Image (cartoon, rainbow, N blue to C red; front, side, top):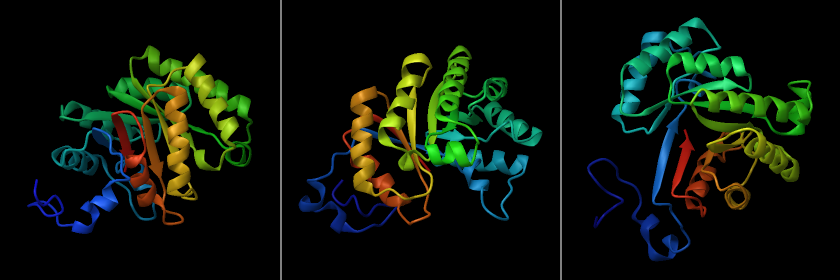
Amino acid sequence: MSTPWKTDRWFTSPWNHSEEVRKGLNFPAQVRVHDVTLRDGEQQTGIVFRRQEKVAIAKKLAEAGVHRIEAGMPAVSGEDEAAIKDIVALGLPTQIFSFARCMPADVKLAKDCGVFGVVTEIPSSDHIIKNAYGKDMDWAKKASIETTLEAKEAGLYTAFFTIDSTRSDLNRYMDLIDEVATNGHMDSLTLADSFGGCTPEAVGSVVRQLVKRFNKPIEIHCHEDFGMGVANRSEEQTSELQSRQYLVC
């Protein structure tokens, strides 16, 4: 296309496409979008999606071409579980995921909803493990292994989601992932900058290390606490990753 910055769908800056700017980029063959509107989108004051609203939003997300829709967390409420089942029943041309704590019971609920995959979360920094959960790293490893194996047995695509990844000690973080990759199961790994405190350069460096060590698709989930969420999504796109990636938006 002669003017990729201006089409019938968008108009951005032509400066982005200069040779000097683009020579340092290394875009993968395809970037896929994992949308969390129906789960993380509710985590702000004054926003609650009802069952019918979730279904309506899911339809629009699919219409927009979103590749994966995180439809919610069935363990939260019966209404959320029912909404996920309604969305699955639509037969949309997108993969439907649900969110789960690292608890086998949550995975069973996800399976009962008929979703394609499950995002299993675990805290990965010693700070959050100790102060928010009152646990230790051994607990995190054990819970992660048990839950991801349950997901594998259920036939669900498993995205292993590590809360507060970027504030963890890198060696201990890698050790946690290695335990899951070796003794548990993960189809992909989600690095989470849960408090928005990591620079794009640091994210890119660690992502490259993760891909080299684990040879798994890397997904990224960034928050805006310090205004770096968008910047880090851009960095993830330009990192030297596998051809399949997901931006968690």
